[in-house]
Figure 1 (tube, rainbow, N blue to C red):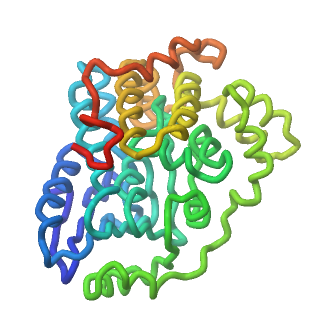
Figure 2: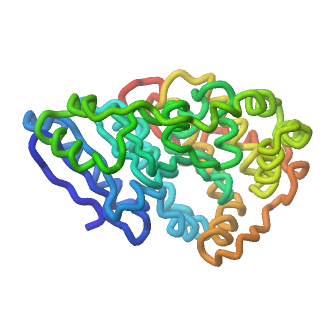
Length: 348
């Protein structure tokens, strides 16, 4: 079993238990969590749900991208089913009727963000590294990531999405991905208190937020990433007198040009949408379109399967990605909508 489900005191405990894969999510793990919520939402003995990860290295490194690549190279059916259930779970966590307490200790990426950052009490530690790194594998931020990134201060979310950079605990608090800072050494004590007294016990463990490195970079980030196109973003970064900006330009140019352009458009559109469900509906369409593009399978091959770190992107340059290629990702998918009504605050 890759998910440990327990009732401990006043809480339901969910522990992701694939430490050999940094707790990467499988379809069955998503289903197991959803079934647990079916039981616990109506159980009066359960006053909160606590999510953590086994192994000591992180909460969750994301979805099982090897399986997604295999699906992309086939008929795509597995990936479509996985994403449908995963995105429904993301929406359900955000609307769950009891406090959702997430221990975002260590690595929290992609699907791990989807399971944690839509919760009520999001705890980071000095070991937290939180990221939406999808552009590095030829994909686009999903699991409600564009909802969170699009609402970060200024253009910080755009910077994080296009560079795939990881946030420290301070950055995660600044950008709205977390609520509380607690040193990792105090997590066992915190868990015992929450099991005994419920989610309100977290307040007693909160410590002042550590510095947020991104706060000092707001000047050049807000200017450079406010550009209308990825090409102009790169130009502004390259022309900046800030060494960090020039480094960001180099990072962008190594990512999938196709993914960069779709991601920028997805973020801009997400800012204009009102609810998480509406953004997830958009991400559903974008993800299904990305599944049919060669960069996803190629990016996973280069970064995870062969690990040669030399992806052959198609097209290889930003200039080769035309507007029609980007627009196609935002058309209603042939698989139908994710929700019956994405404007509703209640998922299917």
